[in-house]
Image (cartoon, rainbow, N blue to C red; front, top):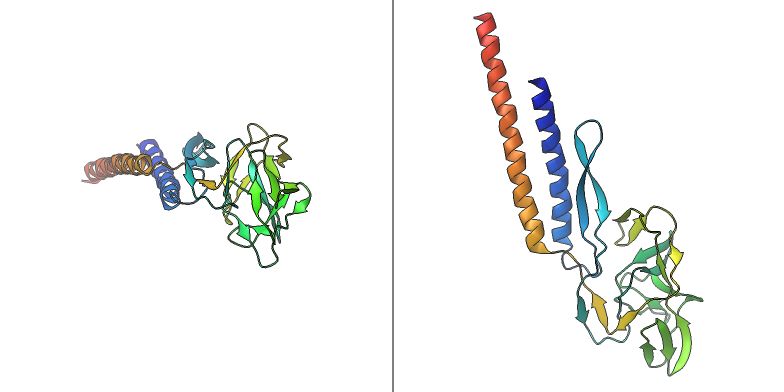
Length: 224
């Protein structure tokens, strides 16, 4: 009986953690470039616990016609320069900072293969291969990096991604200029997962209640 209570409690804890993951996905359904987090149950010797990893399938494109917006159409991540080191993201909603450098909405500079990209003072075009031109003159090429196959990918607290191992530069990739990649979260799927998880949680709670009532009757019978 104690075993059944323990297993039910472990299942309830797992479902609580999974609910956190599905809720996080719903909260980021409109976040540019966001990749759905997976709530995977992995046996750990004490029941099971969900492991955070990312669904790397591409999200749909949204056309913006903004010349500095780019959407990756191949595996990999744009590389940002931050005070704590490089950050990797699929969010290609870029602009120019006060110094005329290509940057994201948080002011983190976008890196090209030659370093930060200066684009002030001219008409900017970004080609499908990531090459950047100002007034028709080549400036640099976007730096795109990717993690090794099989790496565990998860979102960090700053809106980028982290993975197991150090990402390597991608030699060839494709981007769409004037568009951004939307989140690949399907809100209806996440809502269904939350609803189903709640049912599993309730079922296991009933197991504990039934075991508790049975144990109480046995105690009463033994002491009566």
